[in-house]
Amino acid sequence: MIEVLRRSLLAVLALTVLWLGAAQPTLAQENTRYAAIVVDAETGEVLFARHADSRRYPASLTKMMTLYLTFEALNEGRVHLTDVLTISPRAASQPPSKLGLAAGQTITLDNAMRATAVRSANDMAVAIGEHIGGSEARFTNMMTLKAEQLGMTQTRYVTANGLPDARQLTSARDQAILARAIMRDFPQYYSYFGLHDWAYNGRDYRNTNGLLATGNGYDGMKTGYTNASGYNLAASAVRDGKRLITIVLGGRSTASRNAHVAELMDTGFEVERRRAQGEAIQVAQLFFEQRGFGVGGDLSPNAPVAYASVAEDADIGGEATQVSYTAAPAPAALPTRVAPSPSERVAASRPQTLTAALNATAGSRLSAPPPSREPARASSGGWAVQVGAFREEKIANDWLTEVHRRFRSQFAGAERNVQAAGEWYRSRFVGLTEVGAKAACDALAERRVTCMVIRPN
Image (cartoon, rainbow, N blue to C red; front, side, top):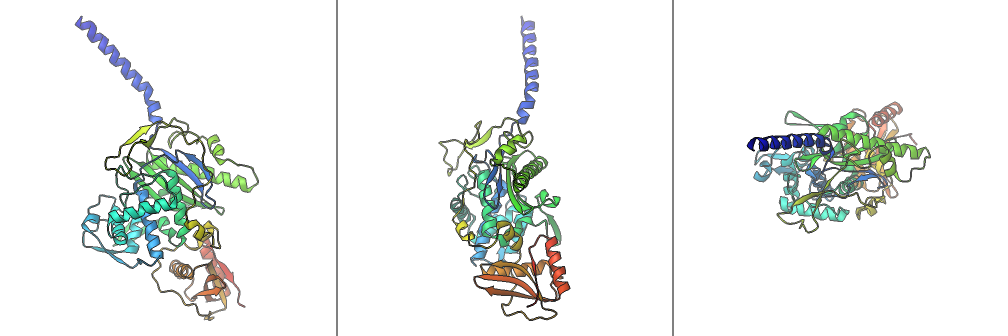
């Protein structure tokens, strides 16, 4: 009798092993953390969305909002790039990734922002939050309030750096809204997100976003990872005058996430190219689905996907919020445009398209004294190079300073000059020879900076 039972148990065990082996490929295809969205940065049209409104963990994408509030404080004059931050014990105690300054050490706000954007330094994000908000807790309240103002309906912040916390949630659509807001509201600071590397205290740091080095139009924005979130990436690229934003949350690895973002971007730009050629593609989502992006995640586009969501009776603000993982369909109606924010009304008065504004106001160091608005004096010639025209004089000044920093050799003999023309402020380098002006503009064009050669009157 015992022998019969033993043989029966062995048979059951063998069948169980065989069943698990057969089921493994299906289980491997599932990705319960995946969500994605592709958005036209200029119009806000949603070209593709999958689980875009499902709540996810932002991880270090949180730092996009941290820097948004920093840009806002800089723009309002509440802080300055030259401000010196003293690292608090709380900031110093943050786990990696971090810059690693000890409590009591100091760093300028500009370098802290670079460390946050390039290194994804958790300690610097907290230091920035404390500097602007007085405390991290107060700063994260400001972050959540700003998210509400921008129309980010699924987002709540409780840390400035995105380290794990069950209460800190977002969605792919919300991150697209935030990405557009950064570009639209603070184009002069956008280039922080596109820094390929950064040198500090004798050490070189490379950006965690590997797509920046591919030379395929990528110029931002931010990576993120925790065990709970998976591999996140908010990416932006511009090709043929069109700019797209792609958000992928919950990737299984850096490589698969980057590859998936690249595939989505390529497909999105294909939609834009075909439309420009006159092809009628009214619902871009269908175009993506025909390419295999209709259902699944970053490893197998057509695999069944379960996604993370907060239970209906969960208190998002509570200490013990539990995140449940349940299967559910994608939203029945996909909006064709991400929600606009109140600041979009201000941006509507700007003269340029979003892409042109980013090309012409991608400044990242604005601490030099503003250039003079006196009439141009021809020091070595009467030619000029105009690098932008803006509604705000400060932005015109700031951009001149940044272009001069980045192209100092091309404008060594030129004078920086902001000329008022009605409601516009023209950013110009004056006093150049014809050869010098054309050579300088060519150098700017190679780096995708908008410019115009101005002949003498």
